Image (cartoon, rainbow over all chains, first blue to last red; front, side):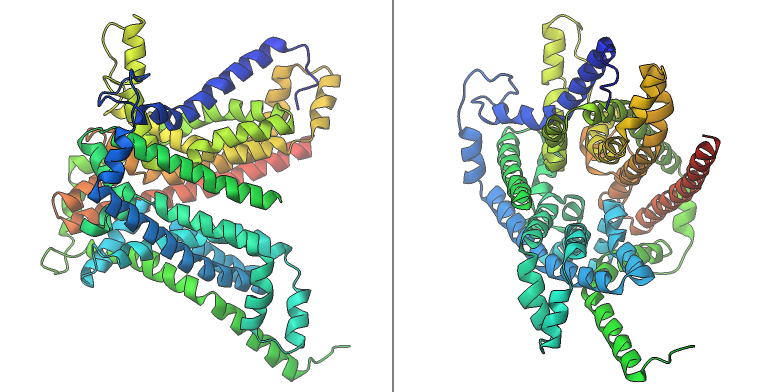
Length: 263
Length: 296
């Protein structure tokens, strides 16, 4: 873009050094926890003097953390299983209806993603309190699904826009009903996008913290809720081990999505 | 000549439209249940006493409290501060990335997006490790003799701002980078061949053409900053209290549902105000662009 200015070397050096600093700022907090998680000491030493796996043992040996891990994985799976079909159906509907109707549906579906989490959390808290459902998995699940639906829609809408609807037309004219057309043609054709949408919905639930903090309790506490509570009290290197594991999982998931989409 | 459509076909088309509408119902239902109903419930709760009677007392109590107004000021300071720093850091970074070869740019973008994929609590923990009194940055500063005493970098406004900028910067960067990538390089070559300096090209070609991206990025940053909770709650150490943490404390510590709801409504009003201002700004921006191209 700036190749028309080969003589401005100094400007380029300044620009790139600045960019490098900003990129370092962006990556630092993610990377710094990795060596710390292998430290043998409970102090924050950097670089650690001795290495060990004790914080990983701590995590896997703790009943509380394991329960939270189970809750988070269950919630993520359920969220993806509910949000993706809902999103797929509404994306088909938006794609076919088009125009103002589709735009209206889309803006309603996107509302939760621009509403501050704290408002959704306390509002849901009031609604669930009236039904005596605060602290149940159901309450958190509903909150996570509503956040995952827009995420899944963002992946699926463009995929459906590229979809060749003549295939469905052909199947319909040969007597297939809509359920058959969706299950037999649309779903297999959108396999890769559906996988991406599922993983994104799963990650949305896994990372969601505010609703969990307000609505999950006891046995149903999620990983983010427990991490939030322990960060407020004291800093334990177990969190560094969890953070490292978590980041590795997320990077793997994102790489799967990226590579799948390329091929 | 007008053709009267076959009534059977019209009925068919109408039936099909209804069918397609019905496909959106499950998703719309869940949004109604888990997003719209809760917001309405907050409005209702704001008019209720603890006993469940209707009152405007919650509003009187919250609006006459100094804590509310300082929370409002903190919310604005944090959001606008975050936005300002994002523009200052993000625009040059986007320019550098957009000027790189596509291959290099893609790899660098993946690194830039790394924080976006890192769980918010993992990042917050990372910042605590870096910024605390006995943290890595202070250890480096005192160790190298740059400062005699550790600097107060976290559990205050500074730490909260650092954490928020770190969260928002990738979100800001995406639309700005996209806008800069879309600039036709011929425009820059043309300007260069006419003798424009690099500074002039940035000022008169690149910046006006990326204004739309910077604007979208700013909207995203503001929308997310206004109600941001985790970062102020952890990195603020209880000393930085925007509306979001004030709501949490009112609800969890004081069990005052009515006042928490009024604070929630203040947050909604603030978002609506910003929305209106942004719409007006966009209209102005569009007008200016039209005028600028009319002059050109």
